[in-house]
Length: 90
Image (cartoon, rainbow, N blue to C red; front, side, top):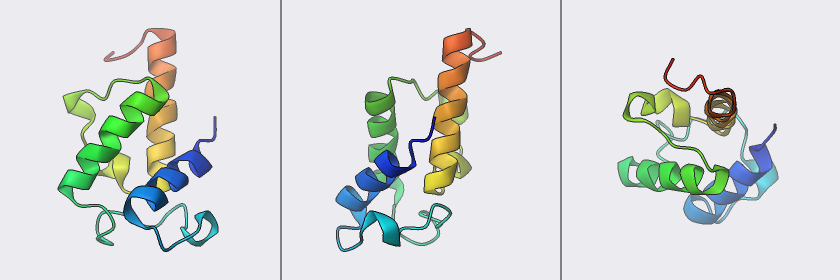
């Protein structure tokens, strides 16, 4: 499922209020581009868990999972799929 617009809206609302959804590229590096810092990453993870009903395990706290809108979307789809099939942590 494509959650790109939902993720973009959250990032823009919380971290980039001067941009529109169309102005944020899916592959923009949110971490090295100083859009999201360590506290912002924690806020993003909490939002992902709440919004998409998934649990982010400590082993999944890889910065690459939260580096861009595209990587966040792929990560949500991956962990959501594993939770639905019962292969989480396998």
